[in-house]
Structure formats: C-alpha cells, structure tokens
Length: 174
Image 1 (tube, rainbow, N blue to C red):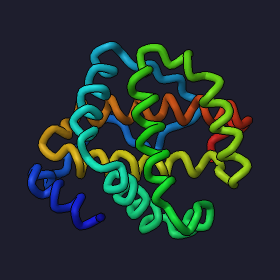
Image 2: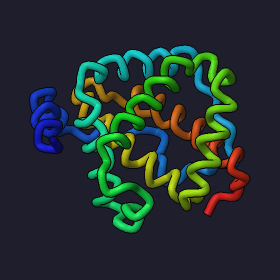
Image 3: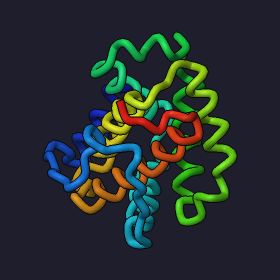
Image 4: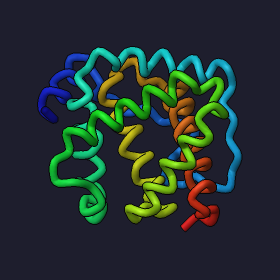
C-alpha cells in the first residue's frame, strides 16, 4: 500500500519541499498556540482533499514513516496495524471536523492521552509523530501543500499535542 500512496503522491506532483515557519521538531509543549479562522479553514479544506483515499493507505504511509525514522517506537504498536490505520484516520477526521470547537473534545483528548501514556508515550514522542504526520500530509497533498497549509497543520498538531501532554501530566518538554 505504501507504493500506492507514493504513486498517488507522484501523480499529484508532490516532489517539492516547502519551507515553513513552524517546525514540529523544535516546538515547545508549553507554548499555547491558537489557530486563526483562516488556518482552521486551510486544515479542513486540505484534509477534505485526502478523505477519498483508503485510510489503510494513509495509515500505512504515516506509520511507515514513523517507524522508519524511529524504529524504537514500533514496539508500542500491535503487530497487525490495519485497525490502527483506521483509528488514526478516524481520529484526525474527528479533530479536524471540530477544530473550531475543539473544547467539545476535551474529555476525549484527555482519555486518549491517558491511554497513550499507559502505552509508553512520552512528550518526546509527540514531536516524532508530528514530523511523520506533516510528511504524510505533504506526500498526499502534493502541490496543495503550501507554506500556509504546512503552518496551519503544524499549529493544529502542536495544539493537540499540547492538550494531550498536559492531560497526561507531561507538561515538561524532553
């Protein structure tokens, strides 16, 4: 499936690299980040572009990148990943749909953070996941991956990672 995704990405001419102002790798989980209305709209529109793609393709692409860059995190996941792929896409879809009223998801985010903490997720893992997510989105969006879209997604992810880290009691960046 990874090859299917790459084929899709190539068809969308996603071989360029877009510099952006934000970087997941050096964000500080203590920083409060609010998304402006236009950034929320960019995230929603760009995610809508990917919703016709099989969640298994998106999930396999994301986790292949995550595990390739960070082999040690593989042990935190089940050997059979098909359900995990769907959970990832469903979770992103729910968050994106409610991004302008994210407070409605506060309890769900706190529960998810607690579960992730039990699985061994720590603050430094949020950065690894964020990098893999942005890379995956870039591959899928191709020429639609602009600096503004990248910054909006980075802010979106950092906001959610902030909430999850705080909910899990991991407010210190490692």
